[in-house]
Image (cartoon, helix red, strand yellow):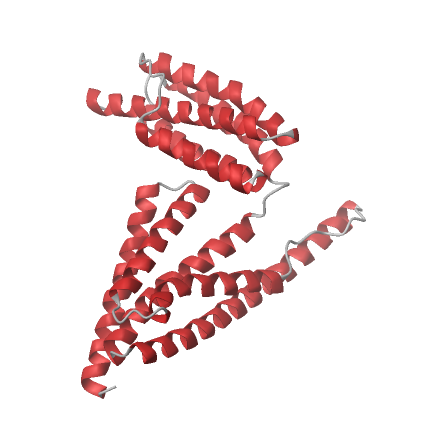
Length: 316
């Protein structure tokens, strides 16, 4: 690694740890009870990490840059509004992002004389801090619910950005496009819900059987908990899908005569949902936004092309 790359890496690592420390300190002030106690455990760990990376790279950075300050304010505000659930999600997403980042760091330094020192701090990151967050948040958050909400929304949004584009190209009439869009969105939501119900039912039966076998062998009398009812999961996916599909459809409902407003509405929504999914999953935000924009662009191009061909050759 050349000096320029090492300097950039040092800045990223130190500022990331400073951000986590600042975030935990902010959240500690607006929480209470066991959640506040968890944050109070995390704060000294983050202070140690900041000091480690500053000493490791011999770089003293004490202030966050503008982007991180803005991100800190936004996340803190969201947690103030939505309360403990939002804090739990932030804690989990921070851990996921940290694990991915530090595994990359280990790949860079594992065969160097600095490996032993880095290994110590990474074990602390993966062990103590992750255990604190995991042991607490696993009792509070059902990641399956979060996934169903946001991925259902994402599917409906991407599919109907393409569908509305194709309908406009084929029919060239707003009323017809609106009817086709609402009909398609309803059918798509039902299809997604049924698919989720069948998949979740099968998974639940397998898990139920496996847990009952383990309880029999262990002599446990407790009832196995196999998660949410399949009907509830299906309902969440279907409603989320329908809600996502509405973003490109609503401009037409409110009188738009052009597909451009549907593209703008859907594009803004896809960026927003990409940011949320990236934050929850710990994925690189720019990468997530880029991938979703690529997918939605392909959906629009392909659907619009088919719509033009249908209009031209079938005379719709």
